[in-house]
Image (cartoon, rainbow, N blue to C red; front, side, top):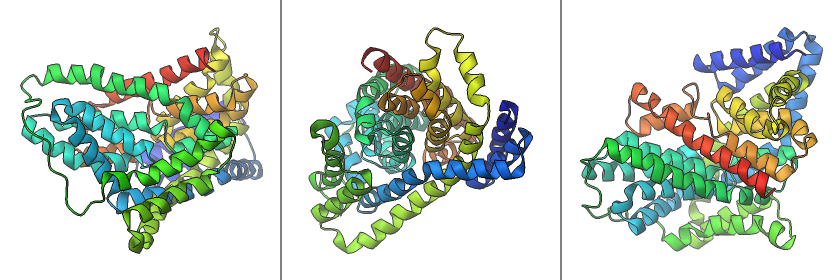
Length: 417
């Protein structure tokens, strides 16, 4: 199957997504068209598509299990409690850092980045109106913080990258802790400094932080679930005790419900979790089909030949493939899925460890996951009360944050891995 055919398939999928076709069906159509355009018969194309879905099937099960923890955090109000607690603790004097940290902690806990931004946004916009801050600046801080949290989270992108490369999930999360810190510093103190110069009349630190909303769980009970889930996951690297994410993530959610005494709404939490993760699971089926076609094509050889022109070309396969695939799909999850499923064998053959290969894919997938043909772009524009043109102007900053994350992981791999 030729590389040109695979690229035609990707281009068709992007076009269909832009035209508002369901992403899963758009990716399936792109996979089928790409395979046929690549000179392969229909039977072989379908076989490649099915093989791609089979490769991601184990991760899909774990992604669905992650819905329990995510549902508990959002439905019970624990996510809002965590966000409120961070912002109150830091105060409006450090409003940029507070918004970024709140979004970072929520995504690191297992909340989807778009849900994290939606949760923090009302608090951020309220503070912004009092302080004279532009919505776009606050939204950028939340997105940057969310990206940093996403690469150390038990979210679908991390699960799928670890699963496809055969790496331990908790080890992949730990590998990206330092890059996440670097990305957070870059977001708040570099991007934030640029935004402050553009808005010199903002009243930083003049007003007090908003009071917490009533009816929400306490901060300690709100963080109980994520602490238990992450604690179970890190037992393997610390003590050699393996607790699969299929068990650890639902266990964290159930412990959170018990701690918050919200057992009566368990059905609502599960319904929300399966609704959110069900959509991701369907998307993963679509990404699996196009990943199977890309894996069967010669596009890997083309990329390897291009990277071979540099002295460290083999080591760039993971981050570069993730950057390209996240841009093609406008999704962290889909980008990490296609990159890890299509280039996983080449990454391991180049000598990269499974953990660092998955970590580099995970951070690389944040570089272009915010493109306009994806849902994240439009969801954040809506919650940030921004026009499409205004939202487009944030893309270079978002890409810079993603690139810093990817570069930091790559440097850590060179010196630590």
